[in-house]
Image 1: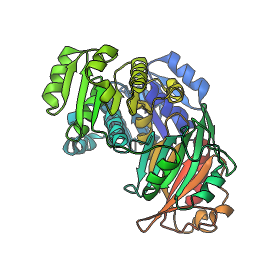
Image 2 (image 1 turned 120 degrees about the horizontal axis):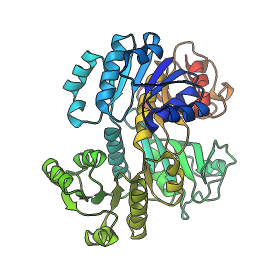
Image 3 (image 1 turned 90 degrees about the horizontal axis):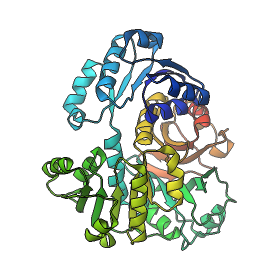
Image 4 (image 1 turned 60 degrees about the horizontal axis):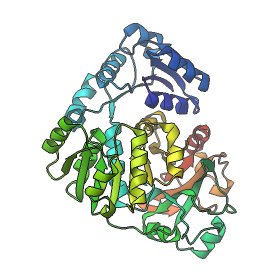
Amino acid sequence: MNIIIAGDGEVGFHLAKSLSKVRHNITVIDPHSELLAMLQAEADLMTITGSSTSLSTLKEAGIASCDLLIAVLHEESINIITCILGKRLGAKRTIARISTIEYLNDDNKQMFKALGVDEIVSPERIAAKEITNLLTRTTATEIFDFANGLLSVYMMRVGSSAIVLDKTLTESAKEHPDIEARVVCIIRKGKTIIPDGNEKYLKGDLIYMIAKASSLDKINELGGRKDYNVKNAIIVGGGRVARRAALNLQDKISLKIIEKDRDRCFDLTNMLANTMIINGDGSDLSLLMEEGLESTDAFIALTDSTETNILSCLHAHKHGVKKTIALVENISYIDVSQDIGIDTIINKKLTAASYIARFTLAANVTTSKWLAGMDAEVIEILAKERSSVTKSKIRDLHIPYGASIGGVIRNNQAFITGGDFQIVAGDKVVVFTIPEAAAKIVKIFN
């Protein structure tokens, strides 16, 4: 696929590096030549220094033969203009990063489509939705549903009280045959492990598994954790992610937002009728204690400062808050943040890139999710008639290294797959894969 990415930051660059590993033809347009030089040194792609709203620059990038134009600059007006121009010049499909709330309703999305913007991605809206999901399933460090929750990608940390601690995957599976789940990846001290049955569960491991919804409670028991109801939460920072998260949550739980900008506090008060708005510094521990930190079920740090978010979550964790969520915009901090005990990391760049990446995959890839803290994704892919994957049992398929088939959805029923499972045409198959294996996986399903 010929892909042009217009970007001026980490969303575009992370997307470009990941997609280049899948052997797409990538061209990146950016006004900063020094950043492009760094990107070109790390990935096999083309770069053009210039503005994506320049007709000559778009033509130089090959817009006439472009399969997908992705505009993810910080300035949404530039993204909109880029897509409009690109569509007129021949781009088959366009995606624009947009954050303004009023642009995101269905009526306005149709208007943008008529202008030439085929898809809209809002990192803030996606991040807010993740936060909402995590507060309804409190033991999960990260969770993503397929087929309306029939199967879930579920990540949790192995605690000191975990029943499976120091046992191998095979031993645990034999002791608990009623649990329908498959471990597809372990992150241990920043290292990604594609496990076999002899791998042990160790304290502090982050375990990614594909599981049936009916097994999640039992999985939590094995991990030494128990779900609880979040009745109240504190959000530090009143930016776009906080506003969207509050709109989702304020009618379900008791909610406070701490924001130090006075004018923004007035805006939040007008927008959020059932949320308490406090004008103050969310990094001030004495203020947090006054606002009931020690009796708070969830603490969510969403300021513009990654460092402030990490430190304030550590304070909350120290004072007994059960669930901490930090907005970490610096991708290089993700591993460290997970290792020091913050429950969940939200990164707008990764969530936006994950959403966009599914438009670069084959038509039978129905859903995809990039995983935080690692260069890997989970995809839902439809098995086609006469495809290689339907001709043999899973154990006899040539599954590339770095990929693992975890589950199947067939006739609105979920199955966790083993080596003897036979995939048939029409199955929706959930697969864990690193970028280098993605193209090979897609090939055997087509």
